[in-house]
Length: 168
Image (cartoon, rainbow, N blue to C red; front, side):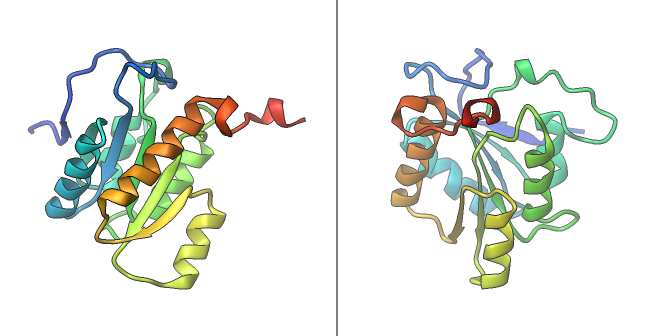
């Protein structure tokens, strides 16, 4: 079976934080090829490395969270995850919950996107830990806005996410 991940850059240095000389890494999860390509194009234009997965199961495998995997999160570098809400097999919300349950990945911002504007779905995702809920189609301004979330996460002096031990 062919590798189901697609990556637009060949950066080999892996860690949760990034050097600002290094491209931030975005994982785009969507069952629709056109939507994956739109995300990829928007973020490549924003000087990001983009890896795509066609469903939540593949994203979990990539992140080392699939059933039976024993991940080494020290080797993983993803700075932002963008996932479609409506996908077969597992929704973007279910993927969000799995990521937020992971002690080592929970600080990665997750953005849920959908073509449907359903307030209960939006609230569920935001309460579940989503950084943003955006409506499709994504625009270049969305990519620029999301790039700021990546930089805040990786530069706490500019309003980054505090770890739990720093909140006390």
